Amino acid sequence: MIDGLIKKHIDPLWETASAPLVRMGATPNQVTAAGLILVCLASLAYLWHGSDLWFGLCLALAFTFDALDGAVARRRGLSTRTGGYFDAVVDRYQELAVLAAIAWVHDAWALGMAAVTGSFLISYAKARTALEMPVSNEGWPDLFERMERVIYLALMLILAGVFGSWVAVWGLAGFALLAHGTALQRAFRAAAMLAVQDQADRGSGEK
Figure 1 (spheres, rainbow, N blue to C red):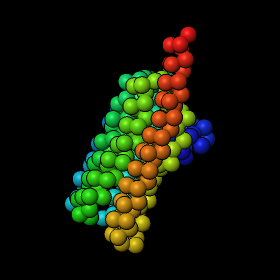
Figure 2 (figure 1 turned 90 degrees about the vertical axis):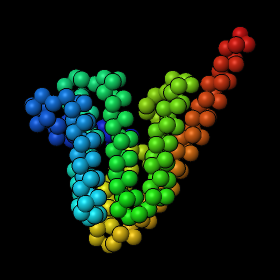
Figure 3 (figure 1 turned 135 degrees about the vertical axis):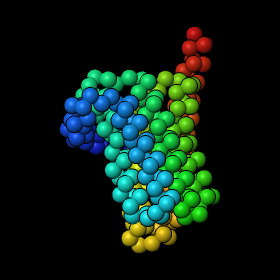
């Protein structure tokens, strides 16, 4: 939702920030892979040091690669369907690594499972619709999209580092509720879109 509202304003900022990567000749997929490696390393380090604050700050830095890979692709004219697919898969692995690490450190496996499944279902609800009918990647102004989830996790961990671990546990529960709520929001939108398409298909058949 945030990305859709401010995308045209923040994309130029990301493209400016990506200039060093462009000069180095980095490809979008390399930037995406670097982001995954950084998130995984930060998650592994979190299992060792257990500091919510440091993990949150590290994630805030590592997650910037989510935007920089797209900026590099636009600046170098390397936007591809393959790259978009790779980026989407990497996003899922990043969230899995982060949520699993939080569940491990705070011994909150049930909440972690609820958060992971909700996050994955958000993506699946749109992807599955695309198998039934052509859909645009735009026009899905949902509550808890990727950018919101990234900001939520980093901020949740930073606040947990300041106020105590209870923030992370309750924050994980809030993440799960928001994720499943958004997955249902997308499912209802998809059902409405598919119903319209079904009606159009029946109309075409009658003719």
